[in-house]
Length: 350
Image 1 (tube, one colour):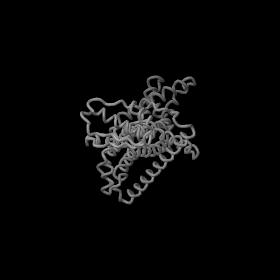
Image 2: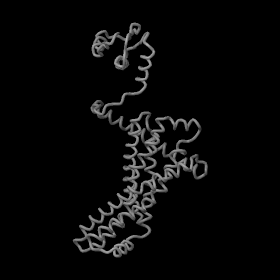
Image 3: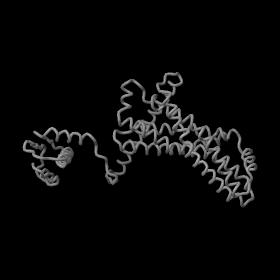
Image 4: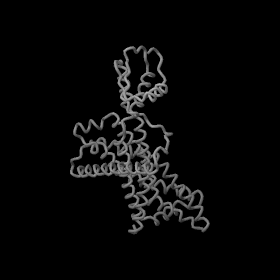
């Protein structure tokens, strides 16, 4: 064939004119070839499959056929500019409904496996290394303190500043302490900490498990008879359940200190007055309400990250998609759970 690769469009036009059902290509006289020729064969093979034409490659070099098989083994990633009106509206709606049904089924199956794994843990039969638990706790606990400190302090500053602008008009600046204390203890401390952990730790869980899925390490665990949920998911979920309430308490403290900075510098309120007012505004139930939320948020972040990682594909781009899905799912579930718990607290007067 030399160094010339025929144009695919001209070949397709000739095939359309002939209206053939079988195409035989002889490779005996094939001379020098490169990846352009393999790409030509790959596109021609796709065309033949689409139009129900049987393609036979006769006497082609083994290297050519090997490259063609490798190219056909991995699906080509769809372009982001795909035509959105390719399917009718009802067909697209039905397809989306089926995808949502499958995703819901997968999620419920995973949650069920985690529940059974938790029961095995209570009976002392869960299989995981305690060293892994301590390492994950260190990563999502002490190593997360700097970012939690910064965000919580700024949130306290913002709450105090916004409240001061309104309360100052009524001469009630002292109640900024109530606003900041209650806001951080019941809502913002737990929520902001959980969102930080969803973006930091949830994405890390998805990337770690996704990389293990790409390298077939999870399949190796199954082959050895080790439950991946016990060995990989359970330590990560326990670590977040243990560490997120502690981080929540720390975030409450940082938020209250942020409000103190605003009151002392802008409102001429002394440190003692601020602390006494905060102590009078808060009770133990306020902190318990935040701790309950933070524990639930920890479970949601762990489940979102681990589920995205376990369902990751076999390519490097799938790992990035899994991390993105973990962050999105984690934040959405946190907001929904927070709204639900707030309504429940209001109903039971907690």
